[in-house]
Length: 234
Figure 1: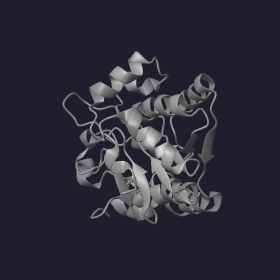
Figure 2 (figure 1 turned 90 degrees about the vertical axis):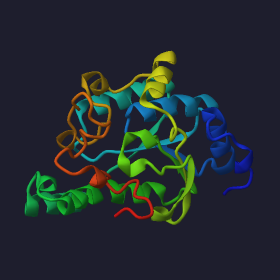
Figure 3 (figure 1 turned 135 degrees about the horizontal axis):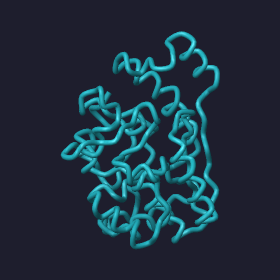
């Protein structure tokens, strides 16, 4: 672990973020998809450092509400979002050879699409980073049960990965967002607790887990796009 981490209370959001900034800034950034967790973290992070780095991946198929949320966040906090985009040639080749919805044909095809639209741009975004921050929570899905607040990211050359909300419940995140009047994605009010690309996201039914609306045609153990693969996950 980085020096000094043993003195940090992992349940203290402000302390975790302050340690992350003190230790790694400016070579650290928050990855935002403008879901509820990410906008909460943006509020907390900008409160500690107005120049904190935030990046996002524009897959080319995000819901309009996500773009609008990103714009409102930028305006509210007067911050700059570093956008990363997929390789145009790779996207064109995929759609010409396999069509516009190949990701629904198989897990392999879906992973290929996510690889082009998300994973490769993320690799570029993290190329100059020593650490990054995510909004992942254990409660979200079976693929995240073993999540730690701080872990070494084996998928990205072992850089440090902070998951400050790992232990938070969805109710806690909502309480934070409402208490601080944080702008959030309007799709959350329409039954979307987890929001990704438009054709791969739907509202969930009562009793379903938070990520049931992501790639809903797949079984739960496959529901990661490759951005947050951990040891033992493919």
